[in-house]
Amino acid sequence: MAAFPSPAKGYEEQPIGDTITEHLIPKPSSTITVKADEYNDYLGLNNGDLLVVELDRRPHDGCTALVEQDGDIFFDKLFWRKGKWYISTGERAGVVTENMTLKGVATFVVNDQL
Image (cartoon, rainbow, N blue to C red; front, top):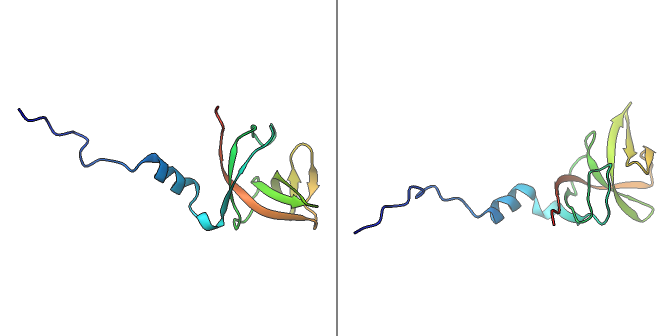
């Protein structure tokens, strides 16, 4: 006796590993991942969360940006107000200064659930 063919035949999907990577990292040559090493309530980050950062992405109002200042690298929120960029995390707040360098813009956060 022959078995019935699978009703799902012809509707197979790619493994989630391939599609999730393509979704999270559409531009691999200009994208890095950074693991959060501390809790940051203002940014909604927990220790161990993974941030996907596009290095060539232009900032936009309210984005989470990877910023370098005096050798320190950190994530902050950027805001565009009255023709100027402002930065704020709860610890820092004020106008973006010349000694700050935008390294990239976070496009996704993968929360560590373990």
